[in-house]
Image (cartoon, rainbow, N blue to C red; front, top):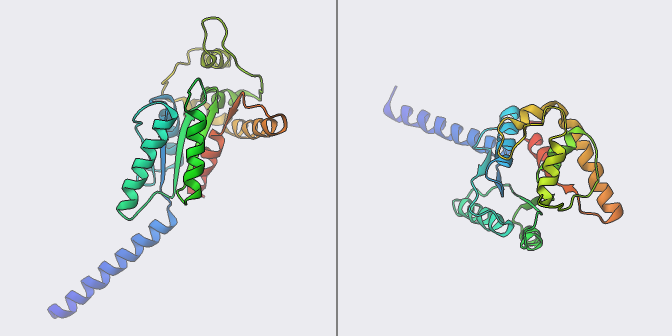
Length: 224
């Protein structure tokens, strides 16, 4: 075989490999998740992704750079634009943060909406008062509002309710393995979260509330 023929075959193989990579990239969207929480939420989503067989090149869970909602959005935008400059922007960016007592909550939510208007695929995944509302919905539906009581913060009140559920007595912030522990109740959580969202629309109530189900459903579509 002449060197010219060998060169042509190598070039054809390289082009075929490139086409396969482009096709694979077209089939596999890339998502970015930036969480306010440094442990609880990332642990939960890492568990979900592992269960779904989705790996970091497809979904990146980035360490946050500041825990206030505005900092979560700002850092997510920084990472998005960094990838965009390299010619392969994320297909979806999720900013996960709580209502809690944050003064920048409303502004951060609005910023994600403004970014979407200029074709930047940002979505705020919020929970009121905190992420544990999503965990609580695994055990049944509730639309009971949570409030500060004595020395317990509003988040403490949600955690206190969660600890009353079977197997959750030792629950603590940052607990690992929480997704796997609750996996068999995920269907309940999804339906209860949608029911709670409808309740909020019907009544104008935003306490409690969570959008975590929408992110879970979006991640599940990556393996369908």
